[in-house]
Length: 411
Image (cartoon, rainbow, N blue to C red):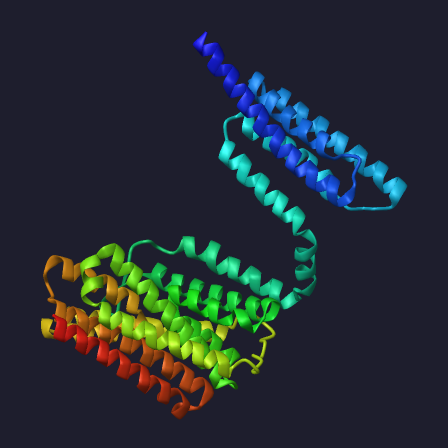
């Protein structure tokens, strides 16, 4: 009796979930288009898919049911096209899709079916908005999207996972290719936000872009905002604040003790960047960024990747050949490439007792200072306005120095 009760409860649960999924899709279709095929038809279709997969192990029966649903959808499509002249196929496609979702429920893939249904309904509800966006996509953007897919999903998996020796140093090609993918993703994100959303989203995009690489964000946006240095400073400060936030999160995970010990240094830099971002956000309100015609610049990506490789090689050589007293200098050199890598390495050293609080704080300061110097240099070369870039940079450095001095006094 317990087994029968368990089977019955499972069947009822599957039935309710399949009907709910089908009914949700049908409700959207019936409300939006007033289709003949609506709530009841979609709910029964989902239930049919669940019923066949739950009560039979015969794949042919399930496939036959799917073929029947396809036939019903095709018949509906022909009748609707003949009488109304409407050639939309969304409802026609969603009917067999609902059957498949019901089949997923019947085979026990409850979470997958639920998530797929939510995504499907979202696409249906926001269909008109998505259609408006797709109408604005140009041919060059589609080509660059294909190029990004080639870089991220085809070339990257083919690269060797093990480091290769080059010029006496181990080089991880996948690491550098990740940088290339990150740059192209940031470029796409910034392009889409500035073109379709507007410049008000620029600070937010730059902040979260800093979680990946604040230097890459500034480098990418330097090409787009080189004629508007205040907008570029807004991007720089926002991306740098995001970078410090991600570095602090990393410390919280690896070494909470170091995060607490170096809190004055990291807080000082973050506060300085946040204030600068707010200040230049107001200054840049009436400045429109020049939209690039293409979201990707292969020339820029190649040059930037080569620079990253050279800095990384120099850092590795310094760490392996210089004495231990050069920890802070090595951190400065590493910060040019990635402050995050310095934060991670310093956290491990601090946990093992290899460095004290004062050395760790100075090293973190050096990494953040080097990262800021790299961003200011990129922005200065792009705009040619070195004085305008150095003035806020000096103020930020002053705040950072105050923070690290407080760290030294407290330690």
